[in-house]
Image (tube, rainbow, N blue to C red; front, side, top):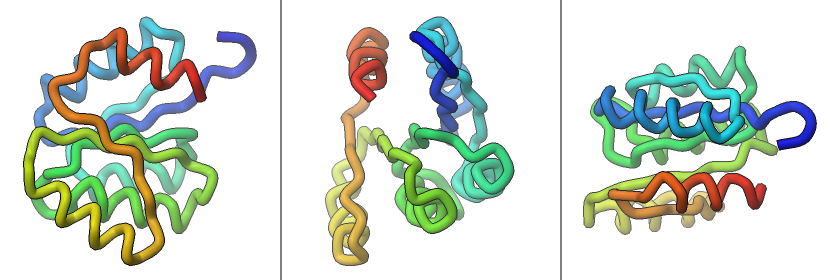
Amino acid sequence: MIGTPLKILVADDEQVIADTLAIILRRGGFDTFTVYDGAAAVEKARTWKPDLLLSDVMMPEMSGIEAAIEICKMIPACRILLFSGHAVTADLLHDARVLGHNFEVIEKPLHPAELLARLQAV
């Protein structure tokens, strides 16, 4: 990557997944920060100003979609990439679209090479 690396905020309540994604992204040349719930993602975004939020959809307390909506309010240029292995995601995404948000969604599991290819295209 040329220039300043993209800042990617990784949020997943499954810490092993979040930490593994962060390792993969760092090896791909991205600057990453990892949090383990939606509220922590919103708080970190407030000060760290990520270029991209990579978040699980289904998390306790605050979903990834709710966190994404809050982060978009603070940082309109922040790209959102959500991932999920749950069928209920469609209903949550519908609610977000009604509010004017059209987030990218990828399904779990995701091969690291596919993830890096998606992010390199940014």
